Length: 277
Ligand SMILES: C[S@@+](CC[C@H](N)C(=O)[O-])C[C@H]1O[C@@H](n2cnc3c(N)ncnc32)[C@H](O)[C@@H]1O
Image (cartoon, protein in one colour):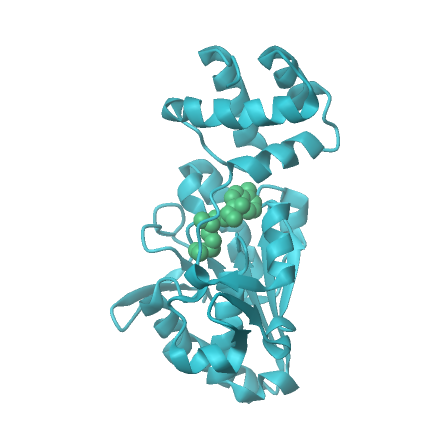
């Protein structure tokens, strides 16, 4: 394990916070020590001091911060996670947005899965979209799946999942949208074609400014790792990224209301969602 002193840990966690928005309090010292030790071994470094110097002063392109990010993010996810919320999306929000677009003669729909991890959420949304809206294939529909962790984006591109990822997929969807042998499942081409994986750090202001024109943003179980200040800056960017009438979906334990009053709160089937008016 790396010989990080408390002071060094605090410096490193401050640096991580500035670059990634992830907040590591003092209870996470052991966790960070083990991750730093892995990076030091990979780089052939003996002293934590040298590693801190590298990250703070000799990493102009952010490559080392990226390698560390790949080790310190929590990637837990599975398809059809938080089913009730997805029902509100499928039964109310999606039909509402689609019929407004049809009334305006628009044929473009854009969804953003922000902090998509290995892609289960994005492919879930692709399945729901095709189910609710069979005409999706003749529209310009896109689900942009972004994450900071490059190892996870490689998994999104592969579109291959184990049993654990697909446990909650309704049976009638399994055959329709996936092929598999009971152990490994592969997302079918038509569904995979809707999803565009993109590397993006939610704390990269320039990259966030390029994200505009979305009808839905799903950022579930991501902001829990941020503090209120970094949460607010990301949610403000999400607001700008959404089209009027668009919706944002956060995880069950997360609330937009804590950091902004810009969205209108709506309730569908006992589920709260946030709309940009
Ligand atoms: C627990 S997963 C959530 C996956 C999915 N949204 C879900 O609810 O099942 C959190 C993801 O957020 C990503 N993440 C954390 N900080 C990030 C940042 N600053 N920019 C982009 N993605 C980030 C992590 O890499 C991780 O894959």
